[in-house]
Length: 385
Image 1: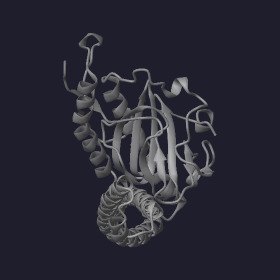
Image 2: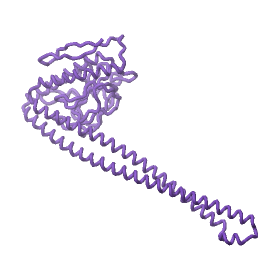
Image 3: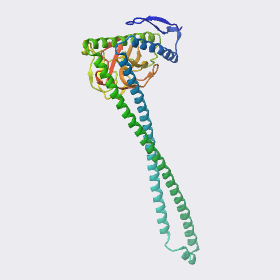
């Protein structure tokens, strides 16, 4: 039975009405129903995110500018990704046309060789003209056979010439298609360059906002307060997600979760671990996950089968994706440049889920966490390096 429950939001000076769903074991929810329920609570998650933001009055203007910059970059990055897919499609079609053209050129060579062989055979049959053959009546049978051979070769040559002409016409048509694909490919590449230039400009604007925000925060005490509040906001979000997800049965099927794959989970992306779990962080805090260095735009992969529980911007974490893997496990991927899945999507292990962006204070790279029942775990014990 579906019902609503009112929850006290930890760390907030108020109440948040949060939609939850009680799912009894005998309800037998289907995967589609479970996914639908998760999608319906997306609005409540959005309300929580806005509530968290509204409670943070310090640096609100700069944070709004940062959020807008991140969303603009994401839009450009997604457009670039679509253009790249289009370009790859044109390249595949161009490769197919070139292969087909080569096949027809080989066919053309074979037909030319066949025609040459027939002409040479006709030449070897006899060097005398038809008039001499007509005047020479010594052997009527030989004369008749020779004329038949001439007729055969004549018809065969005509057919071969016609086929050659058809092949040449086909090659001309193929060349037109190839030229069209080359033109389309050039256009896509020009558009890609324009979007790349736009992204570079957007990244510079974003960095200026980050620098401005850093100057406003200033002291270590202010930075500590900001980081602590970022962490509390994330933990509040995770707590509410856990409440919702606990009511929605996981549909893992035969897929193995992180609990069964400890030490064998794939890396979310290849790169140097710039900051590891437990290492000292700014303002006296410690890292609860890994900051993995990678170039902006690098693809991020899901570590285990699961369902997207959160895919949005969160203060302190930028564009954040949280994936629920069942049995209390979640993986977090933050400071992305673009998010490629929405809440409720089921994602396979190794699936590309986002692209790397820049962290506010630590350059380009992905911030990654693994959590069990809300508690941060050391990725070193879980990932296969």
